[in-house]
Length: 552
Image 1 (cartoon, rainbow, N blue to C red):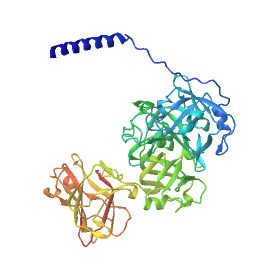
Image 2: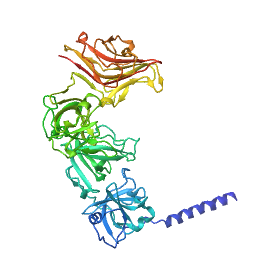
Image 3: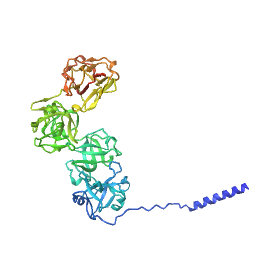
Image 4: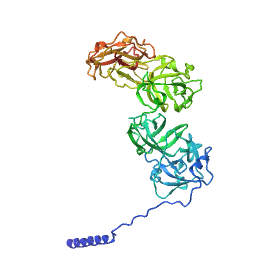
């Protein structure tokens, strides 16, 4: 009986398999492609729509525009936004939906029925969207199908317009543009750190003109490194208030970097004897201090909006503007110069000395972005009316720019350590005082190895501010010829440096020490160290902004 049942079961499986095979067609039918089509046409260009804008308002007319998608949210650098443009202009669309790129790919033509949408501006950038808190907001997702209509499949992408930083105007806002032979000021940094929502980077041309490139920390290239050299950059031109901005769509918008551009226009070599003129200074980036000469024409008043002031009276004393002529009133043709507190600010600030306006001045500092344009920071010298401060220069110079630079720190005792700060245009600082407690510390700030081979008349100068110490015995300078370069400095032999003038120890004013002879160490390799100590009873503060070792 069991064998008969097994025989029937086998026959059933054979028949079932044969029946199933016979029902399967050799080829599957391809699903139909749904190509969206629009059976109406536009009646208004984007330029006409934008030109009609006067204030935030509900669109009540049957306005229809059409354009090609030039940017969407695929990289995350735009959030719930995209831009379109026709042959006349571009416009930003604010839409309350994510992953717009799935439906609105680059090159997709769309038609927009604008009636019952809102048009407004976000800090001067005109947008299409909806009502939100009395201003322009995002079009709710439920309304998208009533206003946005795709036409056909995505086609060729819009070719960007090639322009220069001299061509920025309202007609090009929200359009796709390309800049050639430009560079970034923040080479080696990442596009957008994660501790803020978005970060401004500075793009400059060969003449020093600049604009902001703004990147969201949510973009998929936020942690990529900013390239060096010159190259080509494409993006959507934007505006925030009076500040021009460029928004990258993805890393494909950054091309051909690493090339070397011709020297910037202008003249000078950056020395005291042959300073850069303003044109060369604007087109140059320098981490090392250089001299630049120009006329004092005004300042930038620091506030909610940083506003250039060429007429006075002047309120902000921490900067001034220099230009190629004494009559300049366009901030784009000026170099903003950072004025550190102390003798330089007292001598140059238009708040302190308004009569300096119109005078020719030379200033020494690093050329880097300041107020989102080519500027000078870490100002350490000046020459005005035949006198000033001309810092000593040497074969070893450390300008502390809010970091330890080439120096290293070693903490023998205590939790407090040497660290960077912004005083005097950039310095390093050490204190054992953490309000309201004094802590026991022994902390060393140590230079890299410095060769004195072939040098004669070697001397050291450093710039310092010392305050709230019991005595200067708590802040000493040393030299060693046998320190290994790492580890506990107490394992090496150190010679204390004495007999030089320095800070009195009771003020925040930075002063240069007198020259300290290092002739006893000539021909050897040395390390210079600054040793700080504090107790549970007294803990002062020691700040150092500059170290120079020179020779005859």
